[in-house]
Length: 257
Image (cartoon, rainbow, N blue to C red; front, side, top):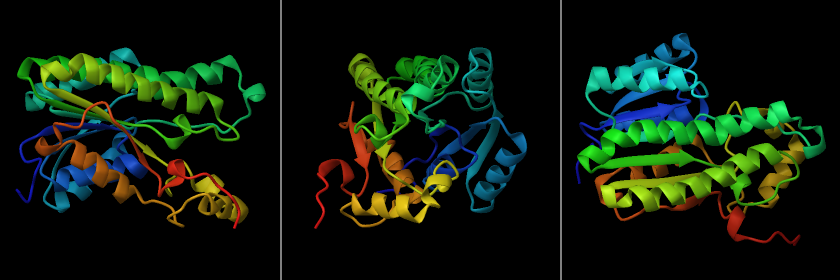
């Protein structure tokens, strides 16, 4: 197997400025892909690009608001104009507001559904056009265990992630004959800027660990490794999968010892 299994592949990672997206971008670059780093902050993306280049990787900064159709279309056009094609798309950009359903107004609901479901759909359609023409492509959506299990709050976020899982299956079915795979990874709690607020509460963290057979949190690098594998040539038989990355949480029923 090549030391760089993604050599010469052109990849886009949305939400690449921090957390899981940053780890995915670094891993894909380490595996040989030229990575388009997408987020709203050009300065932060520039720092990520420099880190990747310092380790021998290749990266292009693409500033965009993934929820804005015109901005998204311009971003994909720019990347294709620079590098000729998109082989890999990782829909990672996301966000959560942990509010009770009764406290979630329609504006917040629509914002989270747009970010977590509509934007990944739009980016997939934009990138899949060229992939289908070349009969090869990898799309990996970053979902959440929250889209598989009912957690105490966050109905809008969970609904977006559940919808993203079904979108993944539908696109896999529709585009599989064209040589594409569309898969989803669903992490449980991983220390990132998105989760640092709740994980800083010792009681909450203890409850998370008590429900996790592995007895620990995951890491961004572990999520990135799974994403990178799904992007490889030898993962071409894996399509339409919702892969939990959760230390066994979704496979277990909690019962106190």
